[in-house]
Amino acid sequence: MTQTPPAAIILAAGLGTRMHSATPKHLHPLLGRRLADWVIEAVRALGPEPLVVVTSPDAREAFEGETIAVQETPRGTGDATAAARASLEGFDGDVLVVTGDAATITSELLAALLETHRSAGAAATVLSFEPPDPGAYGRIVRNGGGALQAIVEARDANDQELEIREVNSSIYVFEAAKLWPALERLTPQNVQGELYLTDTVRDLVAAGERVAVHMADDPTEAEGVNTRAELAAAAAVLRDRINHGHMLAGATIVDPATTWIDPTVALEPDCTIQPFTVLRGGTRVAAGADVGPHVVAVDAEIGSDTLVGPFCYLRPGTVLETGAKAGAFVEIKNSRIGERTKVPHQSYIGDAEIGADTNIAAGNITVNFPHQPGKPKGRTTIGRNVRTGVHNAFVAPVDVGDDAWIGAGSVITEDVPPESLAVGRVRQENKEGYVRRKREQEDE
Image (cartoon, rainbow, N blue to C red):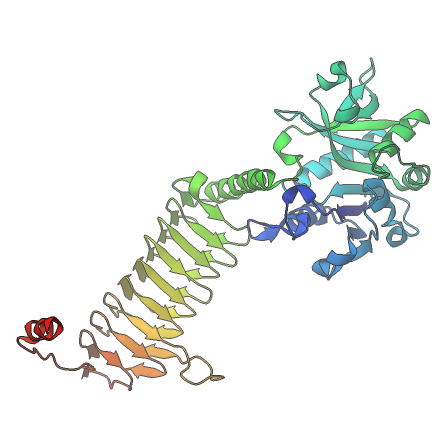
């Protein structure tokens, strides 16, 4: 029998004061997404209807496109959950409540939590885990039969309870018909005057309702983020998870610990990613490409059998066609580099089209910034089988024809016909004795 999809509430209204930031905690960047986006992505995989994001008034625009509920005043997780009630009007199934800072949660773990809840016929089910250091997490207290007896906050726990390793993740599934009355019965039990969702669990247990517990096998999947240190730890977990998936799919990542790849990046089998490489956005790396070390690529297309790096920066709009090379200390932006074309070292190529089998010598620059305010950037076109010289500058818009050569040190301001040699520099002039005469004048 097909199960009715759950509803989902993602709690993302907290200010995250421990982040010490003007940016709300849930909006902090985390490996190509915002922190809360990782949670939304994991929850959405379960097909919830509806999915409601609870946010603060100041952050509501950040979740445009989602179903939003606003917690007008920060009065705790219980109040935040209640803020979503109007968006779930008429829904009588299971309600998944997930904190918006659980960046490393997986859809598989959430599905297992939901299955435990339904199998147990519970009014509520708590996701628990055993971290290396239970610290400030609320402790899961079980009775002699192993059933949940209470969730005790660390600050309220006695010495015996503090020895408990199993803790509350603050992620739950509730039966909707039991959740809303329990929220209505909440009263502030703390000096902050806040309403805690944890207290609904205590209320349901006290009322004799069945409350189940599902323990996560991997504690890293259930931990939340409250500080920048924890944000970095979550990033490392996500990095390892992403890299592991790429390696299982056939990509070689030489040193996964120093390689950072956004979840939106695509790697084909048999590409190689060298250490200290960062691949971001919609970057695509084809089979046979060798990228790194020390390469940053953002929204770039890296073709098959290409060589990139070391110390190379590929900015958005870069396309390296088959067999191309972008070498040491090269920066490329919004440009297409043709098949087997080489940009080996110390060059900036921006807003350019370069044909196949061309060699760009050291220190070449496309000067693409407009000379007149308000004018669009110019574009440089360099044809097939062109040989540039060292320290060339191409002042866009300019077109260099196929098979042309450019003299070393030349500044190219006009189009170069095919099969031509272009030299755009002043002939060397030696002024003998100039330095001696200059010194003599200074000594007078």
